[in-house]
Length: 247
Image (cartoon, rainbow, N blue to C red; front, side, top):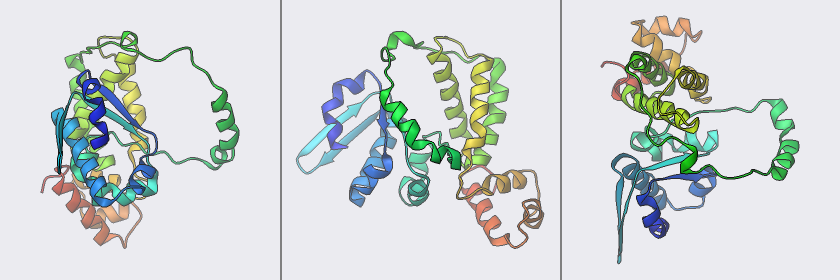
């Protein structure tokens, strides 16, 4: 976090930070650094302000900050509860993508093509709409989607609703629109299959069935895992603690 002090003025205007390889960043740092990074970014995302203080160094970062980060599935699974916790991970719309065998085989060729690609220019403030409104007619659908997203990602419905609204506005803004339309909603709905953690593929189904009132044994039969009783109970307990299910 201390390296960001040089961008204090830039942050005031509002920026989107990119971490192209969050796995390598976290692997190369000590535990204290990782905890401070997660905590500091969480404060920036939620409060728009973070004060760094260590020994003789003190400074404050302010601004509306967002972030796009890439991390491997294995690293995400390792850090999601032990380091990230809810304060950090719930501020992200986390999508999982598993490459097919064909994509893996074509990766080298695609990488070479990507190296030769050139773009005419960068996206600037002039290329997007700065303020996007969400018509009230979309709010009931957003509420339904937030519940579905919370089941699949094991994230609180309130956080999911905020993330969905942010994604709708971002998609509309990049299309130079000042109001959300149906195609923005369709874009968000396309994200739904990628919310499932490949390391825990049954969690979303378990929570959804529990919300429908099914018993643990009924859920076990539904997902085809009759000996999964204890695991199902743990998932339901976790969902209750996160406010996804009523305790």
